[in-house]
Length: 160
Image (cartoon, rainbow, N blue to C red; front, side):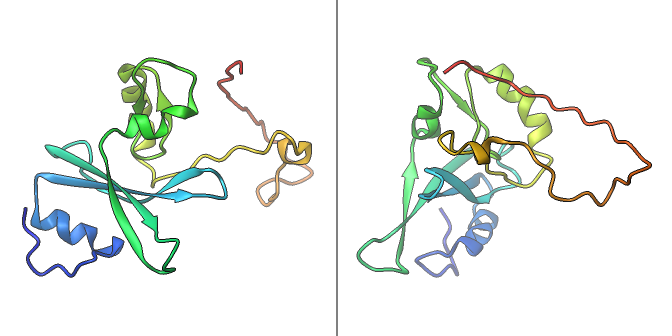
């Protein structure tokens, strides 16, 4: 592993430099989002699917020293995120949006469309707050009174 010229602790913005020095390693870095009880992506290598090794890191804040952070190696991403589904078998996780899938085939179909976008975080409304559970449009800049726009929504619903 080549770390020549890197300053530690390594800032997230310098992960790309590490990847350039180590051409067989792709880094995927997450952070906990306590407000959403989820995770969000800090860095994803553009070559996450083509390099020999993918290293997933979780960046944690030090509760005793604000401003201090620690990287933790995530050995199994599906175990970290697997509680999002009731599927008891092995799960497969999309590196770009952190969605969990029950089969590798479905993940591969999903990735063809997901990886063309920047990393995303899916958030769900709080079911105890009905006002958050309504679909509304905030911007109407592309419609007028004389023009009607067809709107189609597709959803995958699971019984809980």
